[in-house]
Image 1 (tube, rainbow, N blue to C red):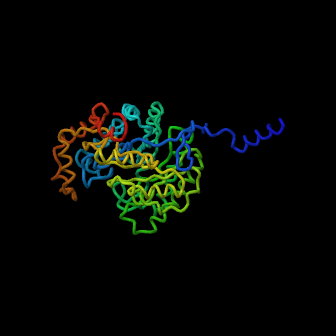
Image 2: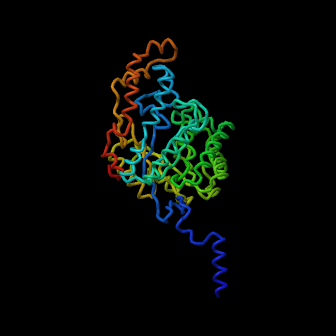
Image 3: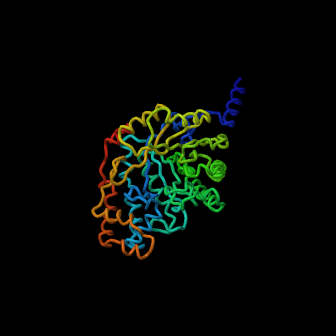
Length: 409
């Protein structure tokens, strides 16, 4: 009998079914539609997006048609020159999110953040004031802050090579060239593989969100684009699994993370989940049911990677709706200027309006740029003031919004 018990123990150990229910490797894992912590508890994502930090968006600078990093950078260079602009972006990356921000997010009761980033942080392209590949340096710093605070991180490639969305959101040229370019697809996979190789053993990272909001609704009629999404995901996951078999990979649906009919294979990897986005809808069960139906069909977790940009009453009702349906969430965004649909409001600098007005003018020729350009000293001061205003200590907390999320400001 003793020999039988001993043999059974050995067989269980080598078959991998000995006592592993506590997920002792330290990573968040998947159990059907749920995420499970290393100590075996259900984990519902509750947190915020660090939008605009490593992927500047025009509306958070109060701009209209100047709405992607490339167009913002062009406008700044026209106003104050490329050298001053480069210095501005370097300081912006340093000041916009700091350890104080991460500590505050934790104090509210949130358990995670989503980090949108531009792929150029990992290439030699001139991006946000440098040609150096400083993405790892920035992420390393953020991960250490989150490690100290006990926050999980989802890494989100918000701007992929070639553009995955075909709109301002991905800093592209108006078309999702990623899905028609072998070079861009290979570069995207290579970047994710480098990221995965570096962070394969880091348990602070919950997972990798491969593409933010692929294929805008403008391209819904291009069936070959929707058909290309899942095969590309498989290619990217395969590259990641060469170096990292630990982390969850998150897959967003087509048409702004809303169309999940493009998926036909949810068993090609044992650590995948899905991420949806939804804005500006009623807070009724019908407005989330399509995501619930897909989640139930595939029996894998679904989480709302982005939502918000609405009033406090809507946010409170939408949060309750998501949680009733076992859908975790990261609201968008953490801070911005000066709209209050966020946790932290960035004060608008004096004379910022002259920059906003410049971006609205006809700048289609060098002559028109010269005619439209305001006094450079005023612009430089306004940009310098913004670099101070974005610091945590100078932002204004918006407690009503944070309370609407069910958190404590």
